[in-house]
Length: 397
Ligand SMILES: [Zn+2]
Image (cartoon, rainbow, N blue to C red; front, top):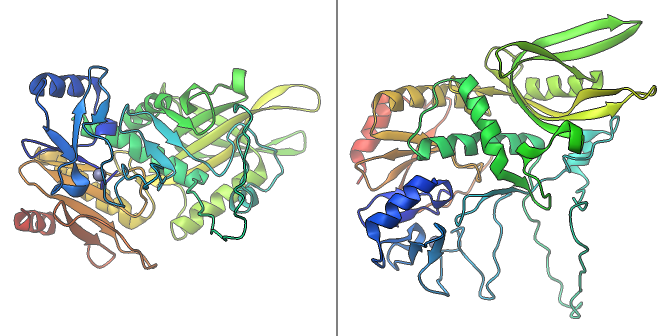
């Protein structure tokens, strides 16, 4: 998404997948039947024009545009779309498709979920019509099959979080608390589908599907002894502000705690921790149905609820949000579809945006158009400060 914005005649940019109906209508009325009022940002020199049609969808004005290879609108010579991300926000109508390594509707307890995610790629087939694969005859030409990107549970949760935030911010609305953020996630999930599943994630229910999406502030752990058995619960704060106990099997809980501990350098969950994933209906041997957390992920968030992969990210987002809160010219959003981008700060009177990049241990190659973005690297020894940020903005075109 970060390299796919659309440039308007007046120099402002838009992210079509996040434009709400009002904004689209407003643009359509403003430009009427004028042609060539917006173009793909990937090759501003070429002006690949787009328009908003009567049905409020965004269409190219001509066929056979040659987009930059890194642009989400890029097609091969045969017209094929190369999927570069596992979280696709549709440009045309704003719907979201997530490609997953697992099937949220199926979970055998006792199975090792970790192995399932890393080794096998279970296909989601239940909602699909039969597919016939015709193999090419030229078996002699060895073509390396490219692996299409798919999301693990933590990556899905992060994408969902970033996506919710982007939709709010890019439509000029504000989030001022984690509680509000959690409510907005549920709202957004009505638009997010898992590939090959008919229902959106937000529409899955325990009654009809045996599974539901789960996203709440974490409020502690409980262990209870019941008739010689140990029962574990995760406490969460519900939408009504009350605390709820959610059953979790001890093995799932152990794995969850271990992952959190590893991710945040030995930290214990605290008031900034959220829990998200999927809750399932199970039947006991005596036939009683009960709810249990199956695939879950614990993570830290910023004060406003933004997903943080590290303490450095938390400090960075908290600092940037306090700066943007006080300055209406600045807007922070984070692309949901590209994990290498730490964030984007739009500056209302500048052509360029600030591209936040977190220094990592691995070598990473990041492609961006330097006529549109100013890279801003954040690391342990180079934190974001107000002075540093405004200095960078001052240098920008
Ligand atoms: Zn393009």
